[in-house]
Length: 292
Picture: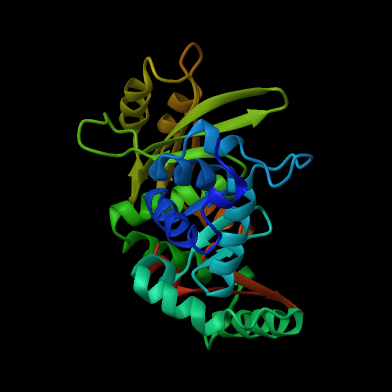
């Protein structure tokens, strides 16, 4: 029988956690990350059943994975949002196992609460940098943001959509866009009260308008897979496209145009920061979209 001492330590689980998050596209909720670590490491049912103590309800692996995430956060390899989504930093995306170990050893003695508070304040300050602020009411920030989105690699734009859906409450969000996928870029599970259902999504980086044929093609790709779709674009939808999306007798397709997308990225603080004084100021974090 597997004992508690035989479960990998938090330090041993730091690198597997980083690998799992990379496989998930760079971000994930705790349960998604844990499941991916378990899958990649091949932990057995016997190992998963081990508890910290006889009367402890938390599995030992979950407990040590929680500490692994804490250490990764202190090493500046990952960050977490107030909505429970964890994401890789630049270092977390690129470091080797040896580089992660070196970074952790440099920071492991800095665990005091006061230091973490100061470090957090410093990171918050540095994240804003000298990015010029934009008046929300001018509308210029959306134009600049859309240009940044249009310059992204298709795979990065898909990962951004994945992160956005996770922040919005979707679970098990996967990017599946590959050749032969029929136009589907990903799928996530949305729960409404006691009912959950899959929602397929497609991302289109358009400067112009999306036609009703694109909606029909996407709906056709969903046939036999799901009954609900989400079409995300940097452009706009024609009137006919909007009517097609809600046509009676056909699976509904929710539409997010470029303006809606900008508002959502601002709402969930994904590459867009705000500060409110007399007016709300909005800053576009260019580096965020280069490194998704």
